Every structure is written in C-alpha cells, then in structure tokens.
Length: 110
Length: 116
Image (cartoon, rainbow over all chains, first blue to last red; front, side):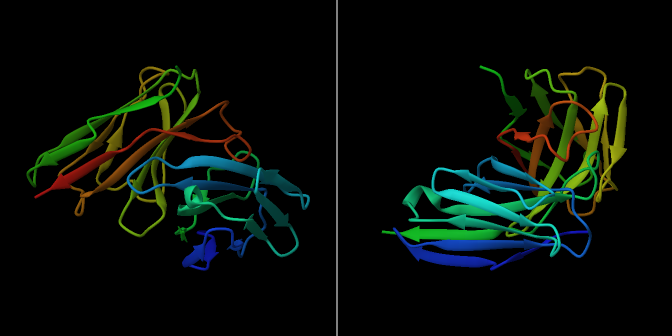
C-alpha cells in the first residue's frame, strides 16, 4: 500500500526549517528517504528501521514512530541545495520491496 | 567508478513499436529494479529481480517484459501492449537479495521515453 506524504509541496526561504511526513496504514519495518532533483535520479538520504530510531545527516534528520506508522524528515536551516522532491519508501517486512509515496516538492528561495 | 548506467537518456518511438531500455551496473549488486515515474508522481515499481534468471512483477508490470541473464544487466522492454508508455524510467540496484527493506537503492540517471 502506497504511503501518504504531506505536505505535497512547501516553499521556504533559505535558513528556514521544514518537516515532511510519511504515513502508512500498515505496520512498517523500514522507511527510506530519497531526494530527487528535477530530471535526475533519486539520491539516497537515510533508512530508518522499526524501533523509533532517529538518524541525522548534517542538517537533515528523520524519525520513525513505529506506533503511528509514521516517519518525519526534518530539514533545518535549509540551503538552496535542499530544493527537490523528497520521496519516502516503505517496506512491511525485512525482505519486502519498497513502495514509494508520491513525493513532496521542496523549494528553497534566497 | 562504480555505478548504474542507463541508455539512451532520451528515446523516441512510434506507437506500436517495442523498445528496449538498457540498464547496467558494476556495483556487484544482486537485486535490480525498474521504476516508472510520471510527471508529479512517485516511483512505481514495474519489475524487480533479486537474483540472476529470476524476476518478479511489481505493481504495473502489464505491457512490460524483462530478462536477467547476467548479474550486471537488467533490460526492460516496453511492448506495444503498454497503453501509455511515455514516461521517465529509472533503474535501480541494491545489495543482497531479500534485504531490500534495509539496503539503500542506487539509481541510474534514467531514460525519458516518448512515444507518439
């Protein structure tokens, strides 16, 4: 089942923060986050496994709330380079394929 | 440098023709995937293969076919049966079959197919 991402789009000024959510109606084993620039391939950001783990990568971090079947991606002090479409991909078991959400388009303006 | 190559970057075909999209990886990954992306939409899984000579249908396999004769290669054929073939096609790979849930996927640069 496809996860639901919110918001669909967000516009920020450089330096502002943003949160992107990814929700599923099914129990999840893992959540992947990717970023895609226009016309390019998606690039891996991070994986979160069930257990409420939080991860960080510079000013981008994420959490996974196993009870709510929801993951949130946090972008702090956004930079122009953060612009792109963010996708979450979810799996229900350790061996299952990923199902991607429809994406959140993030635009960071000067 | 290791990576995934897809060729060509742009492809134009007439309606009714079959077309094959190339995907090659030198990452020594066991698992490979084909996704379709339409404007403003997410990634939809067409086919995936976890090991040579084996592959499974994804969510939108109708009108597509694949083969996996070599570990490095996973070509996708868009047949004339595919009703709306114009899209951006992405190939991806990941290590170790059966671990797609906790192994990152590496994506190729994509092929933009236009059928008129």
